[in-house]
Every structure is written in structure tokens, then in C-alpha cells.
Length: 211
Ligand SMILES: NC(=O)c1ccc[n+]([C@@H]2O[C@H](COP(=O)([O-])OP(=O)(O)OC[C@H]3O[C@@H](n4cnc5c(N)ncnc54)[C@H](OP(=O)(O)O)[C@@H]3O)[C@@H](O)[C@H]2O)c1
Image (cartoon, rainbow, N blue to C red; front, side, top):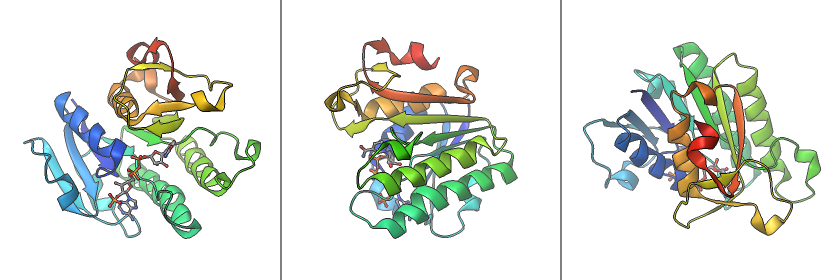
């Protein structure tokens, strides 16, 4: 069993990932800036670290062997937060992980972050931030898993996915719950090491894709 730090643990994917990791028997440290958002999570294997990703959060990694970065600045903030959270906090999490000797770093990235030039949309700065965070992780020497989900939905997970991006834009979706499950399947799983997974709704069992 692993000891997993979830960064962005009060988020919609992060919170489901915390619950699923605990159910799978892992110990979890949840990094949140507001403890009350995860008041409903109670488990002997859960510790909560209150911190802001715009400050030094290296102490959150203490005692952990795995780091999940599922934080994001969100659509309602401006380009300053895209830089500070999606790029810089992710970069700092990688640097802290190197210093702490973390054995696996799992990044929740995004569809389109492989090639931000391929998109002509207001999302491009966000995708550039995600791209640079992913590149930093890939070049860090850490064991990594990068998840690149399509547009996130709140439907219940089906664990039926495909890795290749569908041609039809409307089909480029995935329930957040399936991304949370993909995180759990990636933890301590050698098949997921140094791998980048596209995640879209499809017809392959998620477990067989990742494990
Ligand atoms: N939306 C999409 O369609 C889409 C598609 C592909 C990938 N993604 C990526 O998927 C990831 C997770 O998505 P989601 O829906 O779970 O996002 P979410 O619900 O907005 O969660 C974001 C998390 O980041 C945390 N956060 C933001 N700024 C912080 C700060 N300064 N200090 C500490 N925590 C901070 C939030 O904390 P608070 O609860 O305190 O705000 C929250 O826990 C994000 O990286 C997003 O970019 C999104």
C-alpha cells in the first residue's frame, strides 16, 4: 500500500480520488486550502494538510511516497492563476517530489496539452501551462504517470474508456469519477510508469487500459 499526497483534494476529481484511494487501502494526505471542504471524509488513514499552492507546500510531502497533482485554477480565474497554479504550483510539486525522493508522480493534465499550437481557442494559455508542467515532469527524472482527460462531466463513471481522442469534438468527454479511478489504478502500478494516457469515454475497460 502507498502513502499518497493528493494536491487539490477538495476538487471534484481530487475528492473522489481521496475516497477511492482510502477504499483501496492506501494512506492519504489531502492538501486543501479550506479543511471544511472535506469535513465529510473521515478515515483513520486520512491526514489533512492545510496549505495554499501559492506558498511553499513542501511540508505536505512528509511521509508520502506518491504524489497526485489534481489542482487547477479553474475557469473563473484569470491568466495570473493559470500561471501560478496550473504551471508554477505543478512545477513546484515536481521539485518538492525530487527533493523528497517520491517514487511516483501522477499528473492530472488535459487533452490538448500535448500540442497547444494545434488549438485556436481562448484555452490556449491554459494548455501551454499544462504542457510546460507536463514537460517539466517528464524531464525531472521522476517516475511519472500523466493523465490527459477530455472535457470533464459529472456523470457517474462507467470505467469504459478509450485512449485515442475521438474525431467528433462532442465525444471528447469523460466523467470525473473515471479520472479519479484512473488515478487509483495508476498508483504503484509499473505498467503506468512513464506513461501518458488520453482518457475519453469509450468501450475499453479502464482497468485493462491502465493495469
Ligand atoms: N474542466 C475540464 O473539462 C478539464 C478537462 C481536462 C483536465 N482538467 C483538469 O482537471 C483537473 C481537476 O479538475 P476538477 O474538475 O477536479 O477541478 P476543481 O474541482 O476546480 O478542483 C481544483 C482544485 O484545485 C485547488 N486549488 C486551486 N487553487 C489552489 C490554491 N491556491 N491552493 C490550494 N488548492 C488550490 C482547488 O481548491 P479549492 O477547493 O479551495 O478551490 C480544488 O481542490 C484540473 O487540473 C483541470 O485543469 C479539466
